[in-house]
Image (cartoon, rainbow, N blue to C red; front, side, top):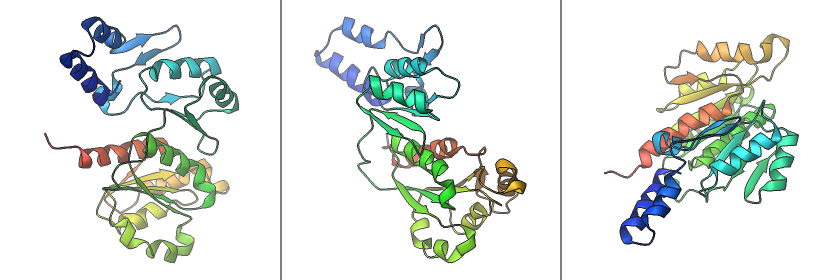
Length: 255
């Protein structure tokens, strides 16, 4: 249950459309629900602005499907990340209203409609085609949280003119997610071109000395651009989550 659903529930009760017992039944699972294998945080959307996200690695397929069924019982959008083939197959068998992205390795239950406004979009830059799976995870996360995205793919520093031709677009976004492997230089370049937060995502793409993304991460951490924050290797989800929170703050109606 998120804030909008809770507000609608209370308004229905005040209008007399539902009785007290129905309200209690709907609120019974708040703030959490204990299962044999998990304790589900139904209150997180109200508290943090986004429902609990299912991290699939280590979970059995039946665990993923049961958690998803409980979290989506009220019809809210729920995201699952890093799903493997067996988990995707189990979800496809049980759910109909779900988007399965094999590149991003995500499951998006009760997908939301497109954002009603393109104001304050999040920029999503991908250095090279090999980095696309991580960028795709970020894109699905932004979609799950209702943040519009401006995507620029294959704009790495080996062909810097590709990025420089997009400066006007970059200067309209509220935050930028930059996904890059190899030496991880792209976020530093972007940071010097925009006046908003830049979330740098190192990927595990690169030759031997890239050390599975460690070289890119260290390069991003040592950037002299002051507006860069670096997330963990291949963590497109984490960068997108933070960027989407910035978007939510900017479009939140004034009280």
